[in-house]
Image 1 (cartoon, one colour):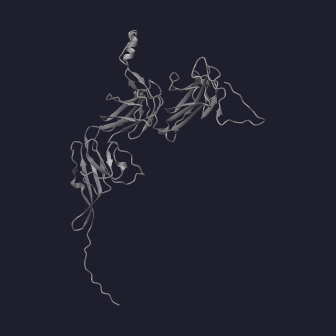
Image 2: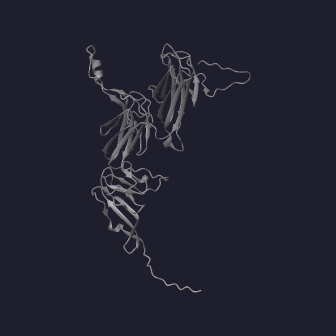
Image 3: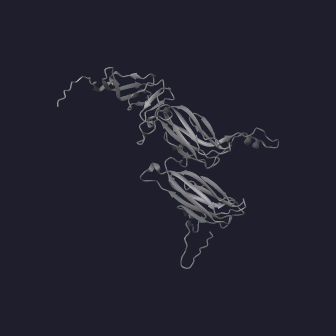
Length: 421
């Protein structure tokens, strides 16, 4: 490694970024990188290895994964030689034979960055020349940052047996690191249900030939999400159990025209599908089902909400928007065909099936039902209704009706008041 240290008098001026000393040419000689380093390549064959470790969180093991952001940059002004530049590769110590991610910075550009979801372990960054004959003489800066979160993709996850476990109603983030990368995820259903899977992005591009393909493994269902669109969704009725989905590059059809001078092998290759991936671009993945309601938020305000079951098209009332199952259409005003329940404490649970397929009744509980008769007497009742999967209408339970309190009306009477001095 080439380095010049300038000392003015007795004071050494330390740069704001750490300077890498004798960066190793092999993983065994790699130098640790905590946040950022600066260095230069001494030849077209020079290689700089850096090492960092992601440690498990003892207090919260489930949040030990997270997202790595790597930035490779140089100072302005850039060079005019597009042949010269840097390349940075990301490896895991468990598999140095395969690159997790590759980014390229030609001398004509100032900066390149990429993201990658990672789990605890030791990783390596390799910086080297783009070309085997020429190399950039400028100094490069390599920076990394880490955000801990259980909602980022965890490598490796390119096979069903290493699929990332995800839960309903939570957004997960991932990205394809190469043209052949495939990201597998898995989720479990306790009861049969209509599952909705959405893949989305924040910033679309103008190239419709690249994108993602979202597939449900057990149903052989797919939906294409070109990078020009914001989202794509697929739905499927799934049985109880474990299910797998995966995200891969968007397949592209090869033109059918074949040149006369092409060989049979070239013709066969053209007949296959090409895959073009939006490498390094973040996608968002969300899985929902009516039987899996969102978690109750302590900050969710009390707003009486009406929601429609997407399977039965029946309406139900909830005391807060947080109680509405994901996937249900909701509104703050009662629909005209829905009889409004006056109690703000009503609750509704969906009918389900147990592991043996036995129906488990859903229940509508109204713990504080106010009723006033013609004489003005106020009654506070407790009512419970049931709905089983095999019986569509909600049924009334006679034993579920209980009187809580009676407030008798006050009888008005004329009272004669004698006023004395």
